[in-house]
Image (cartoon, rainbow, N blue to C red):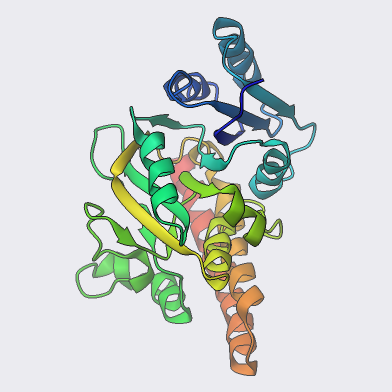
Length: 292
């Protein structure tokens, strides 16, 4: 059996319309690679689409894990990590299409930047426009500003710094936190940092992961020389109401994990009440819009 250079880790949940194009876009003929697919109990035809791809392209090395219970994205990624054999590990969303040469570019970047623990590509939406994908680590000020609603009312005057509106995503740069839609690391860095923290089942596991990489001395980069296409929110929008609560829960747990001083712990408790309140408002607004 040939040595595997790249392991692409893909977690699916009701992605019947996207998983086949995603798998088809992978560079099976140019990189010795495998795909490790973890399906989190899809209720649609996602598994059938995966099986169809395997029948049509039997030369592609696909490892499949079918979970009887959905324990969240972080748990599924860690399951896949335990099965991967590549020197480079790629977290890839099932609602993506990889552009030609993109993964080779990311591998070469890690090979030529020994201090790099993670590298992310430029992400394009369905129209080919750049999709903002890099952020700074959030602060208490950022969250309070976001929860106030001021950035929506006065976007030019008030904007959370963590969302990096000042970053144009056209230039290669060291960054703090690219989203996990497409993130590549090396086996060496992964072994040093470890997998995703499962106390963040759905949201903020990537923020926490990036923070842990930096804490270990690894740098994180964004490069527009590699590009992927992304159908943003394909897994989230059909389940928007519960995702509101899961995202707010992730926000709270992130600040709770890194609250060290007494004032940070107190601020986190206040933040928790504010997040519950705003989640209620957002949920009610979503329900009312759905009933119209």
